[in-house]
Image (cartoon, rainbow, N blue to C red):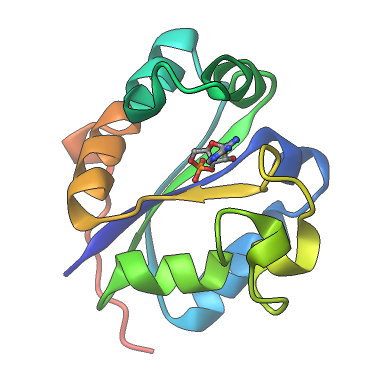
Length: 143
Ligand code: CMP
């Protein structure tokens, strides 16, 4: 079954959106497979955002993502990557569907509340930055 990596960013945690976000993912029918509350090290942040090295927003992005705790999660389900991206809305909250998480709660591209992997490949790479294989819990969910 497809897995995706989702991370509630420091602004989402600070704004008490953690419960609301988890609730939306659960209600969508995705299955929580792993979750950690942590503050990213600079090394983790750089590994995560390596594709953005050299872009003008890179330094600000690394500084922001390491500024406070995040919630790192793995969600599983049919087409989990695209399902999660629809729940989150476009990267820029100003362009996001108003019913999506970023559309409803965000204003700022740099502080857009949540990150989600953009492909199955990215999800695999990002999950490996935050979780060891044994930390992904396999279980039956019938409802
Ligand atoms: P995220 O999905 O975490 O992936 C990279 C992040 O960079 C993105 O969400 C935005 O929060 C942030 N960012 C800041 N400025 C820009 C920009 N100009 N273009 C794209 N992403 C940006």
